[in-house]
Image (tube, rainbow, N blue to C red; front, side, top):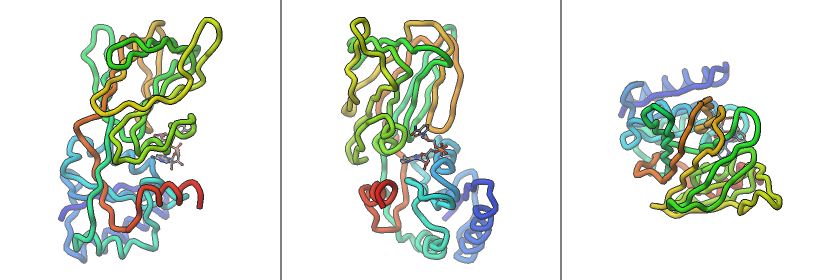
Length: 262
Ligand code: NAD
């Protein structure tokens, strides 16, 4: 089995990396940063999001596991003192694979080829300054004309992240849906939006058409990009999924409980 380790740049994470690498090498695993079967991240959820985007082109051949060295992470749910058990479990194949849905975003701009992104948590769309104005289409039918700070489209596993702060529902990842939440919509006698999160089933699409030509910000998980002349954004659930190696008997609801209640 081939492994890669992605590490946050703090001393503690680096030390755990050295220890884990030693264990893996003793157990006969080989390090391969180009074509790993398993990617272990050491740091936080941001480190795991980073690793996901690094290996986004080989998701069907790579599984992820996260060790957290700061506060408890949602994806990074292994503790540093558990790494021997983690290394042995991986080496002896004592894990199951859980797959989670992803969202595909296609951004179209004037005089440019559309750009595609795969999203593990969420994609948000905002303006660099001022009020965002977009027409929101569901299944290619105009649903509402949104005015406000922005819009967030999240995956089920991303539903516990930014989406949750925006008042969205937490979605179990076996339910293949995407969720659209508003960021401070303007609602008055002139402008009106639905004002509540919308959950769309697999095979349904969201389309956003900006109605003011300004600089806008697209975030894809932890990446932020500034764009001009965006003419359209399309969102749908991807045919691809992310794989997580599960060695503990922890369920999605355990992780939600441990992250937010305990
Ligand atoms: P960061 O360091 O700002 O972390 C934000 C927090 O989000 C961390 O506590 C992290 O553990 C948590 N998180 C990330 N993914 C999660 C998930 N799926 N479920 C529950 N918690 C999760 O930034 P980062 O570590 O680079 O992470 C980027 C993510 O931060 C984005 O994908 C977005 O979801 C989140 N974020 C949240 C807010 C907010 O809640 N107001 C604002 C911006 C970004």
